[in-house]
Amino acid sequence: MNTSSKSAQLRDTYAHGRFGLSYEFFPPKTPEGEADLFENFDELAKYNASFVTCTYGAGGSTRDKTLAIASRLKREHAFPVASHLTCVGATRDALALFLEEAGAAGIDYIVALRGDPPAGEKKFSPVPGGFRYANELVAFIRERFPGFGVAVGGYPETHPEAPNRSTDLANLKRKVDAGADVVITQLFYDNDDFYRFRDRCTAIGIDVPIVPGILPVTTAPQVKRLVALCGAHVPASLMERLDAHPDHSQGQFEVGVYHAIRQVEDLVGRGACPGVHFYCLNKSRAVATILRTLALPNVAAFRTN
Image (cartoon, rainbow, N blue to C red; front, side, top):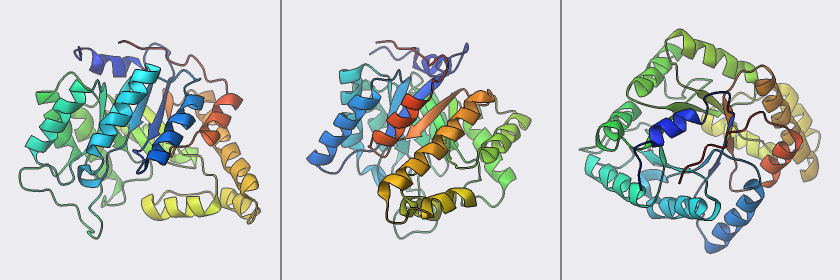
């Protein structure tokens, strides 16, 4: 595989008036879950996505499955694909081996993350010979595997572990300065949080595309779990509408999808984003409903083999 243009390819996904559309999935734990993932993806594949990402379990626990899922998605649907990669529990040698395997498997891009502390630990600690920060991982990829396109994560409402907003933004700028091509944000439910984040990024010289990450909520318990995990602010009006259907799953689904549609309409209508990254949770119904409803502008058709 010729990876020499993959970094430029990822940047060009959002350039020249294109609108980048991307989906995120995770490696299923069972054969049944894997079958469901591909069945669900068949629905989303009808829309002209720019690329698809697959997450990477804590400590590389889904390493082989991540590459297998991403490779199959590319093989069957001809989308560029990205693998997540974290610093958790990994030495430089282990990271290099994974990146070599990813290249051989046809992976186009890497979503480079520090990763969350392992279960039961409150603070992240690198293993001997590993990296403490995501910017070190980005620099490592750029130095040793320059052909990959590289995306990094951003936090509109500030990373939960960051001591303050300024420190969090400085950490993000280090990742971009190390060679990231694009920033994909953590989920959010109030667009003003994204707009403020984007403006702060611009003010400190972050000049790569900043792509909003959207996760449509479909049940009240789901959004409450998300708030507990990542600290995202959920507008009171959204919670009230969800809670108005306590025993009506379809009602909660419709409320959550409607909110996500309004989010994306506002982002696109203001010209505020170069694209949208959908956190799909291995399901298609909510995201497919959003895409059927919206006429997204100039969706990128930037594909190379």
